[in-house]
Amino acid sequence: MTVSVPAERFERWVLNFQGRHGATGLGVAEGALTGAAADGSTFTARLPFDRSYDGLPDAAAFRAETTAPDDWGVLLVRKGGFAVARLSGTTTRESKVGQRHVQGRTKAGGQSQQRFARRRDNQARQAYEAAADHAARILTEGLDKLDHRLPVVTGGDHGAVEEVLADSRLRQLTVVEPWLAVPDPKRGILEQAVVDACAVRVEVVNA
Image 1: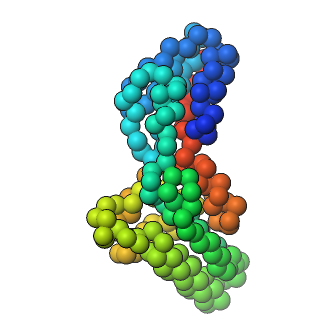
Image 2: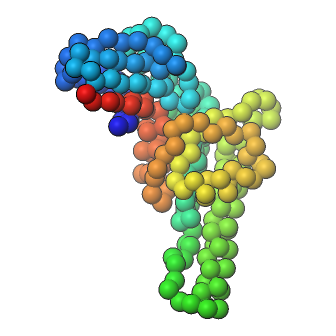
């Protein structure tokens, strides 16, 4: 199983793992911190933002590498809405949350169903265009001057996010892990997404 551990709690999480499974030897392999306990249980912890860890086999040293980038973004998109934020570390510099009405599916048949499907597709496309407009405004400001790509954590619906990222104005965004499975984005969902994006992903195999 994979668990999300807030960075500030990671050292305590390792101690708790040792308490449950016995003496645990730590190591570093393939860019991750690993642990192997006396009872045969193991864990593999990976840094957020696709970073590779090559430091000491130590929980505190690993924790020190979990800091969020100085400039990064979050983009969440579903058919019913979007949320976008530009951040410096864990501080949100600018954000926008928007909802768009997209009709649900219908059981009607024939021409009525076709008209309904076209209307639904048009509403979804308008929602994606609105999301792309705000993403371009918030996430690409200053990128040409700085000549760098912005790391962005994405989530929501895979197809919806791909539709938005296909916009040529967003070509300087680089999607990084983790993918965030979220419901229709609202302000609270966006705030939690920022926290989740900065968390350590730990794959645990219990003996």
